[in-house]
Length: 377
Image 1 (cartoon, rainbow, N blue to C red):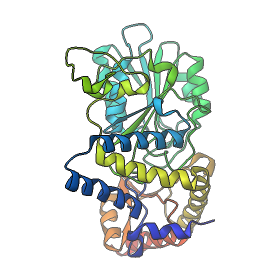
Image 2: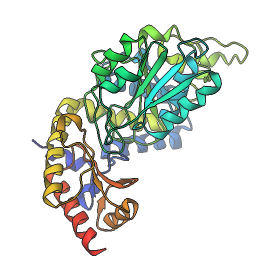
Image 3: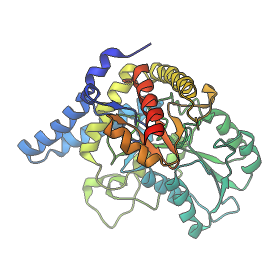
């Protein structure tokens, strides 16, 4: 159960072990070629808006395929923070249904966005974590008839804890709440079907398991909602005809395009498209199965080396990221980098986050080096 030939697409793997897909995945030759294509076109043509916009459209199409959505349900922004803010400003917090329910495990910027809506009447509630996990019953206890939107991350950035999105959707929808999903730690590593999971809004960026760069984010808005909502955060690409250059008319484009704001990040769209094509060709179902296998290897070997695992030990509750407790995790990250192993620290953990191009040997080597450095540093 490997993807051996695909390691050749990632030149860094010849000299390094990169296990940082929870933060930044390795660059592929396809992504590098996409960057060079954009730069070459810029150099030889000066500008080519038609070609640039075509690539933006292809990126939307590829992301829509990844999550089983329609391209007209996808908007492009520059970050998940921007996407979340755009959705937040489209919601009405002036009625009795003005509550936002999110969790302690969500990435900080998501909480910041919802807290900023308190000026517009939002009441924000954070579900407490239990041993860095959110029990399913916590949603039953915290989401009520006053909840306008419930905001979750399918996979925790801290330790890879994985939630059952479909079951959460059923709970929150029974209370009349929208479901917003920050899929940054999930997209590209686990299967996402927005229709089957009954998701209302979903956003993710490109740089982690989607094999791309920072600077671009995708926003899914369920088709039935797009005509009902008008975001306050907007820009010229959210208009019916951006190229009418009419600054005195605020109309809203059809579908999720009304959630677009300013000029799309063109070069990032080239990169995102290249990464998405690879993921769609390989099949995220196969990637997810392989990463589950690597998770089992990571947990078993970490325990064998007597390292403290901060991630769930139950694979059904865990995604690709295996977190190892380290007192000074940031320093350990630097020490490992000097040893040719690229990982990502967060708070008091080192995150071992492989992708399909990694091997069992990569995992074991990284854990061997952690165990050794803990003794000798």
